[in-house]
Image (cartoon, rainbow, N blue to C red; front, side, top):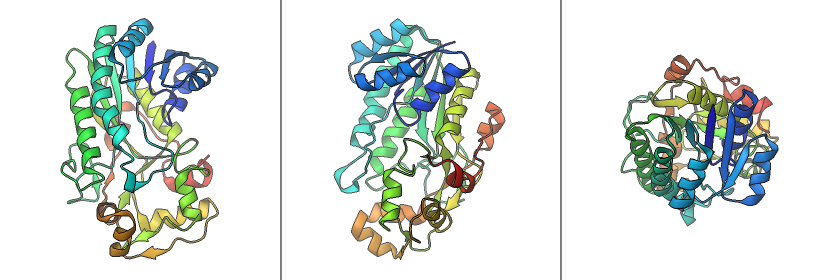
Length: 310
């Protein structure tokens, strides 16, 4: 099968291209930078250098690849996030304008299917602590999350509403593993070693994780399947901060994390982020496992943090 991967040099794109090639698909990977194109070719795929905001160039590149399936894994998240500097603005634009351009290119290329990356930590912080796909999204969230949730909701609506195309949205948990912020050499690990990844308040904010190779495996399954709609791609164990933060610190050789009150965290990172640390909801993977026939190799972050941080 011919597959066009937009965002082929990102945290998800790199293992995805490798796995698609390994099972025999003919892959074209798109990236914004020429130096990343060489990495894509080294993985056994064709590569094109293109900006998602250049609608004409993106259409031409997609048409030239003649894909049957397009994967939307475009993001622009910086390696180190400074919450005081609006770090999600570029990715929000990718998820709105970039998505619009990619869907138009998908239609022009005559592809039959699109698989798009979203996130599983956008559910409204009300009710049960572990959410299924039909749960309410946190639209109208305080910044810095409000614009991000709005952009993700727009992405999902565009993808699922694309006429004449099979479409599936994969809501991924927090990535860990090579090339991610939670890798042993990533920005979250650096924060933990500096004891700047604390347990906030009662530590009730519930996180869902997924190792990037497992995320790529679910994406391959979605490419090959006829499933449509929204699927949470997370591991089997959503966990509150009070459990995973100290386990993560130990796994990377950091000192035991501090505990800080919510009001103090709010002074440092902002009230919205501090509230998220105690109110965030996790996600259930029951539907993805059932409909994709997929199982994460690392069923729990406990195993993954010990074995596969990268």
